[in-house]
Length: 393
Image (cartoon, rainbow, N blue to C red):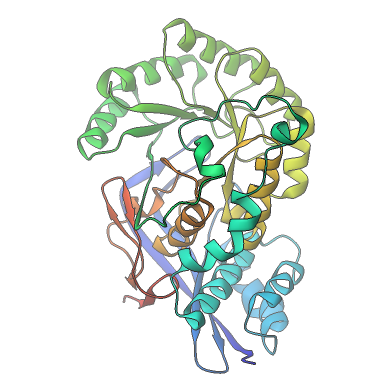
């Protein structure tokens, strides 16, 4: 049986072609720690730990220290298979970006050893847990809540062929109404059909921003993301104003502070749009709290929040069993992390536009191999695993 013999790290800085601005931060670069996990046969798996100061608190230095220290100590000498995934999660408290990196690398290694793509590898893991998981409402005899476009009823029960590409939405950074309108029109010309508008920095002007985007891109589906930026009363006021203007929104993401589930439940009850929990759901304990509070209609699962593919599968399963809709998103990651998240979506059979546009913002991919972007389409590599062959210098 092959064993893990080495865990190595490398810092990568990816310039963006356009600054990315949210209610929490502004950045001109995506910075990440790339990790490789090598086994005794010389097979190598790749992963990444993005720096996410304002959401998870993870830094490049902290992730590198966790990967080179306790995570490496736990993995080296262990079996080079998924029986070692639990060692990653138990090696250190917190440090979810580092856990994400090691977990992705282990899955990539296993897929490469099997001679299959990451999508095919994950399909074996999730098919019985996710596609066949009956929502709680179905098991209780209650009528399930209608699902949005990204989760069709057929996808939960019918086998689907694995796609070669995946659709993503496009995020519009925080800006003035004119700037957002210009960006929306440009992204619509690029072929994007779903736009996520960053709001939450100025509640008084947020409705005007959304209306400007609707006018500039009338054929696009709109999503809002406040990134915890509103108070509950501000959220209700803004969303009620938009409803009065007949604005159609697929969902509103994280309107209030991460831990204030009472406020999020209040917002959910007092305006007509679906609420998507993002920052409020890092792990299973968070998800249980959201379910008990009745605070959201859906969750956004991100590998950097939960610690990788392995815990993400559990979150997706539990959310589905309790009748919550699911979206898979990302931080400001590189093509490596996006490739892993996209593969999970494809394997889980979640159709429609996901929230995986981070790699699009990069001037170029920093890797040889892996996914590519073709407008709103994420195109999978035909190689084994994630298809990453190296970091370009």
